[in-house]
Length: 516
Image (cartoon, rainbow, N blue to C red):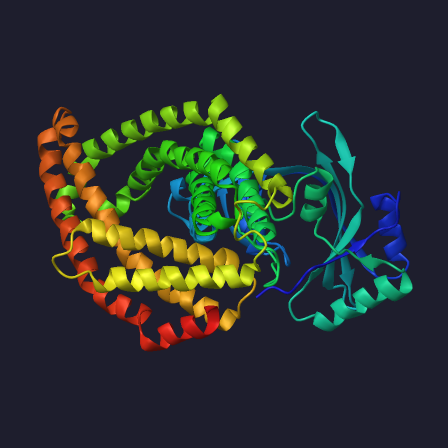
């Protein structure tokens, strides 16, 4: 494993040549190459590469991924042009895809910052004239859209040489004690991002709030819903532009979570106004649903192929063609709605309402002044007990709707736990409960997905059969439907075990003792 590189800030206004001369007064140096380079850095909207300690840059026809700390090359591939958007799962199988895909998954790599750098390479040599520490002097500048450059502080980067760790420590001591240089707190990339006016780490869709158990319920609701609205607004442009599928997913999750808070904490809102806003958020959920469903079909299609015998896999191509066409049509319809005056007014009106919530008269808002810990605990116990009754009523003869309703109720409980309980109740209680609930939700979700997928495939039969090779595609679809039905039955079989864990005496006691 490569060692950590160290960056030191050079004195203001010093040229790289002057910096080299200054260093040579204290170190035995060998002069190296002098060059200039332009690099375009990439990351996902939510900064997944940065979070993983990686940096992706395009330079001279090559996209490379390096370790942010050491500069060690992880993978690279030739690209004719700097991409405007890059999806790892669309890359050819190879080292670059192998490094990127586990980190970014379905997210697109997007241009982050354009950096121009003048570089001077030096080597610290020992008595045998062997390089023991590498030094790279850099003078970077951010190139913004207008072509203007924003200069950043010049720096000296110390690169370790294997087997010469003591020499690296000596050079660091010389720079710090002898020259008074200070180690940079941020990487060049982070400094460039800040200089360009962007946010370090991208824009997260996580909801990380600090609530107090004794906080007024309307104040806590406003804080949670305000953060969820930020997520909705942040993901709307990427949803409309179809940058990657996760924008729509995060948009819908934030809307769904907001609706859950509306339902579970309805006593903190004025009833008439709440009804209006609930209707608008429900509409946003409805108009984005078909597009999201078809996103999932297309993204999961390769996995669907693998469920049928190899001799049938290519026969499913007409089905993929139909799904892609349906997806494009659904997206066009969705984008029209999301660009409409109704969508703009629904989102802005909801935001204005949240901002005013705490100042509204308390008449009709029976839970507004209650402590959020008390109210959230009460709702968690009620929803949990409701799920117990629903789950115990399910048996082998239960219709799919029974599983679906339990799944929806489970989402409400999970949102209560994640949004309201996690900030105010002990983590050793909330986290295991969320894990248990997630296992139940996974089985219920699989059951629901298979039910819907079977219905969708059957509804597409006529459209697929009209295409060239449609007849053989129908046969392959029949095999796929059989597998989906088998997996749906398997989910039913697994339900009893995961529900038993969720409804165990220990879990019931924990809920009662913690949230009562």
